[in-house]
Image (cartoon, rainbow, N blue to C red; front, side, top):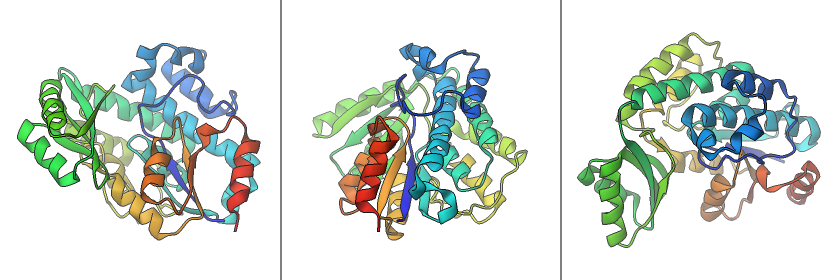
Length: 309
């Protein structure tokens, strides 16, 4: 059975996510040490703490990789040695976890880099009152034109009629009002920086320097990247992971490249089921579920067994 993995982005994290991951996993202990908290789930009960960029990115990365390790250890269909992975991709911060699973980074280095990435983005956004806004129900080209007219930027392409915009908060407020008047659906996001736009260029360049000092290698699993960079060595992996911080995330293209490989099923690893929902809306013939939907690994195994072969 061929499986594609999607690693969640920021915004859906909560204290009880992924209840079956091992609390003593070294990556979770490393994450707690980096964030100076004795119990990450207890810390996540504070909504302000949980939504802070510097906390959320590290928690999501460590939990995603701890979940993947647990899945590999207990579900035969997901063991890396059997060549079952058709492709991996990650949404925004989720791309670090995807790169790790693709063999580009060690798990420990990936958690460390998540903290460095968040810190650099916070520095780039310091003094700016920025945010992000999801818009759907109109063409992606129309959304892009609206962004340009209102002084915002297209941050993420989710599909033919769905995107996330970013920029100064007052510009996004004007954009939201205008878009709603035109009949579009708008959802403000709880994010305080203009991720994946030119406002993050200093963070992208600084993160590239951090990546240059890390031991990146060539991926051993197909990895469609957010920035559209074809990764064939460590240098292009560095380019992909740094460029996506300041360039529009091409999630629609990532999904297209995965669909071309015709996996039997798609699994989202992380909190919530946003990516699984996007996938099912676009490719209903290839089923997708989020592992966070399952309270036990036995339930996930039963679901996977339905699609084996």
